[in-house]
Amino acid sequence: MADSHDDGSNRPWPPINGGDLPTLLGFLDYQRATFAWKCADLSDDQLRVALPPSSMTLGGMLKHLAAVEDGWFTEVVAGQPVPEPWASQGPEWEWSSAVEDSGEQLRALWAERVERSRLIVDGLVRDSGADALEQTHAAWLGRVSLRWVLFHMIEEYARHNGHADLIRESIDGHTGE
Image 1 (cartoon, rainbow, N blue to C red):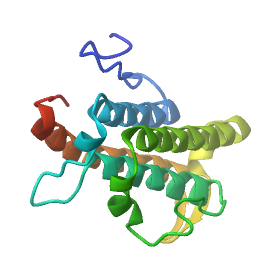
Image 2 (cartoon, rainbow, N blue to C red):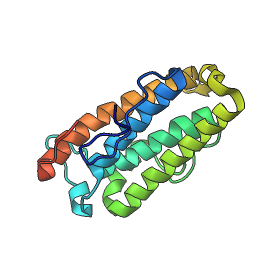
Image 3 (spheres, helix red, strand yellow):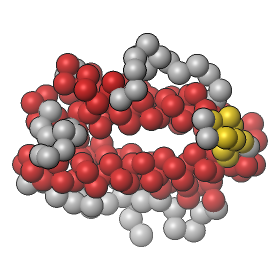
């Protein structure tokens, strides 16, 4: 099997014979890469396009997923305070405020928060190996394992990738999984 898709997206295939940890991380990276692909090569105005009746935009999703990365990996898994810009804002702020940001700012924020999340997970894996999956972390719904967080993040991205696919198709006809 090829290492990545031949559709121009350069999305890496998750391992097909890996253990739990590489498979979960592979699927999360695949979903992240799919989302980046859906948001690529669009202008600031195109990132602000909504598909009625929803007010959801690709720019809003970029900012929302940056907040989700920080919420689950920085705050829950690493046990650190939620960073700015989220700490001083109210809930759902990222959706409405994204219209004020350029595409470059939104993509950079999202990429930075994804990289921070990867570093947090890499540190846990370096310290604990595959046992990192079983370590639990305090969250608003109780103690959750890293395994649970990774599954949740795969689900979060997969759901938003469906939204992103519809919005992107309405903008310029670009389709793909």
